[in-house]
Amino acid sequence: MIYLDYSATTPVSDEVLKTFIETTKKYIGNPNSLHKLGVEANNLINAATKQIAGLLNVKEKEIIYTSGSSESNNMAIKGIASKYQNRGKHIITTEFEHSSIYGPLTYLQKQGFKIDFVKTNEDGIVNLHDLENLINDDTILVSVGAVNSEIGIIQPIKEIAKIIKKHPKCFFHVDMTQAFGKIKIDLTDVDLASFSAHKIYGIKGIGLLVKKENISLEPLIHGGKSTTIYRSGTPAISLITSLAKAMRLILENLDYNYEYIKNLNIKLKQELQKFNDVYINSNEYCIPHILNISIIGIKPETMLHALEKYEVYISTQTACSTGTISKSVYALTKDKNRAQTSIRISLSHLTKEDEINKFLKIFTKCYKELKLCE
Image (cartoon, rainbow, N blue to C red; front, side, top):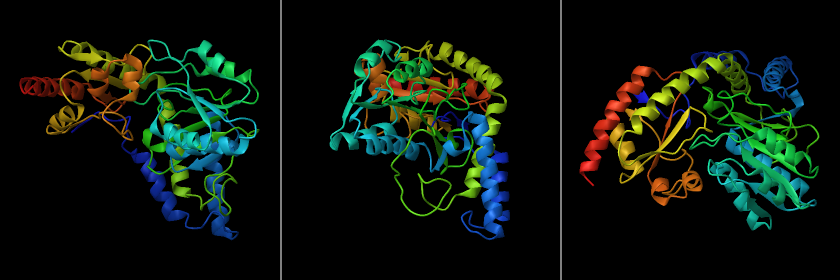
């Protein structure tokens, strides 16, 4: 098997799984219980939270555990909109966001909120001048993904934050899902940030939202006591501790892994651009972990299933996308054909060079066979 869909989800690390299993067996108490077993479980959660806060350079009380980035994104956007709608009903985002950003924004639009899309340049980077012009007295939130999940475009978060800081009524939310563990991040000037375990070799079903202490949110889930007033429910102790382990491990060899993956990406690009009708969509402003290409004349799902026969796994759009056209590729290229024929190859430090060589041979075979059928 050649797995090249790491941006959709990652295999669980053995060490992370070991932490999950050991915690599940040893700590059986409800962390909200007052007896000894509950206190022990709660202490372990506090220790994990302290570790995560240290890794992110935030305060422990600024961490809200969620089921993943989709919930974190919804909590940030809906929570701010509900709490601060008396200040204004204007939100700004980009055309390169995940569906879990567009979903709540579409919902809010129906509730009377105005949603604007900031312009981007030819490389997909936010136009800072346009952002400055879009923010007004009614703007309460700007939501920008640090790294686009389909193409891999890295946004200038620090520069965007400087502009937003000039407007004290406006908050800045960053979806860090595809950035954490791949590039260095800095949450100093970010108000809210979303993360998910299953993108960093953790277990599905756990993520977190960083919410700076000076901000209040209207919860999505109301109920009883938990680790925070902003998200009710019995704390998932094993998931939380395994998340802390996954976050610590993914940062250990960040620079080395980046360079290793970069070399794999370069090799892929060099070989794939030799094919007629193959266009490279990912550019120099993208993380090397994601390589998005378009194969004109071949439907993405057709190529996906052709590769699948050889146990090679890639994706068409993001795993959570709907529709037949990549909105991100279209926003970047303004080319409908490329947007309709794009596939995403996503790499990891686990990807072996031999796998890339085998993939290229199989891709060549599938490409030639499918082109004959046109």
